[in-house]
Image (tube, rainbow, N blue to C red; front, side, top):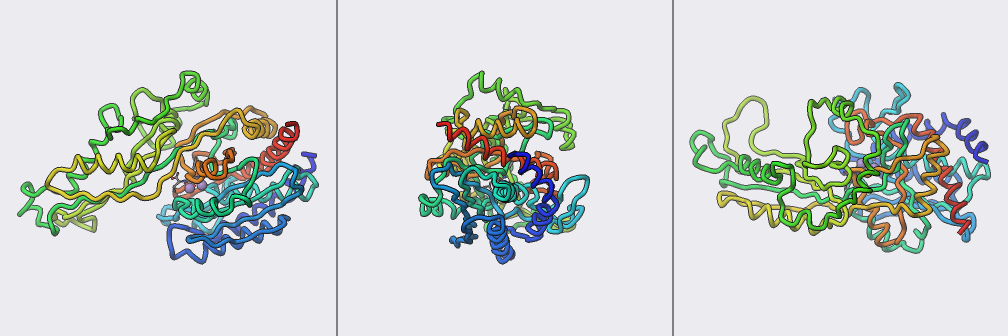
Length: 459
Ligand code: BES
Ligand code: MN
Ligand code: MN
């Protein structure tokens, strides 16, 4: 059976890529209202392709923000159901001048597809559409399939929680399957078993009531940018521990056995540094690089500005300074609670010379996939069959905030079967996705269906 499916994938591979190219040409940037119509066009495109692939019904469903595309194929209600989640929205492509080819004009170079969204997540969720088509057309579909492809993941999935609440019945499934993460390498397949949570805040520090001459007032009036730098610097101690009181209280420590298991993932620090152009790395004392990104909470400034940043020099003591700060969270930290702890601490360390305003943005809870589930076992078997190697479990530093809500609201476990590479440059210029990863991913997804159905039917 699987050979018929693979044959179909091989025969239609070029068309699959052509269709993905059409999707990649639509600049569905969710963050920027200028692209509103393009986001809608992408949703319609996804609905049309799902219908063409053979679903019973597909709909573009309006929300308070960007629409959700929902589709389903119910072969037989007694069969198990897989719910595929993905996102058709993309990050802004700026700065455009750093792209070697335009972000919304996909090209293949050295066996990679270059375009914004190639790996995150258009190229990855589209594998599911094509895997579904291949199974259906060859008579190899073994379970019911539902698709929920959203358009607001890159801006925090703000309206998807309500959508889940309102559509619990329709979204009923045995597992949620997502391809929106990466594998270690094409030689070392892996399954992401953990995603981080997120707490994102904006801070504003105000000093004098107007910009001042930096000579006339400098040294006598506290400078908000200097103050903000000092405040931010104090958020980590000499061991790179975060100093916000209570920050680590709910962090679940991993057992030595769990740390040993994660340390089995091959990792080449020299290659990592070379890829990033670094002479050295640093982070929380007592943890490896993979632990720092995978299992430990972090705090980073995402942007900081104020004063004069134009051409030449302007001597000014600015009235205001701004920063955007994110904290990546691990189980059992709660993003609202962390935002409150941050706010209280940040206000408390402000000197009397300035006023501080803290505004929380989106957040999200961390998630860890249960390893004793049939779904995880099926994913493991699928990788082993397609890639000839048992996949290594990894924990990633990225976030897909809606996943914790799948568990909370729908009570469904999620399996993260991503096929990207860390070097795919998601969110960066020259984002790419390997043609090999795309085709192998489609094959692996069909094998997940096969193994999941078989294991479920044995129950
Ligand atoms: N697909 C990524 C998340 C990801 C990437 C997880 C790589 C694991 C490995 C997702 O599209 C993303 O960018 N998420 C945002 C969430 C935010 C916008 C709320 C993130 O992690 O910054
Ligand atoms: Mn994504
Ligand atoms: Mn993303």
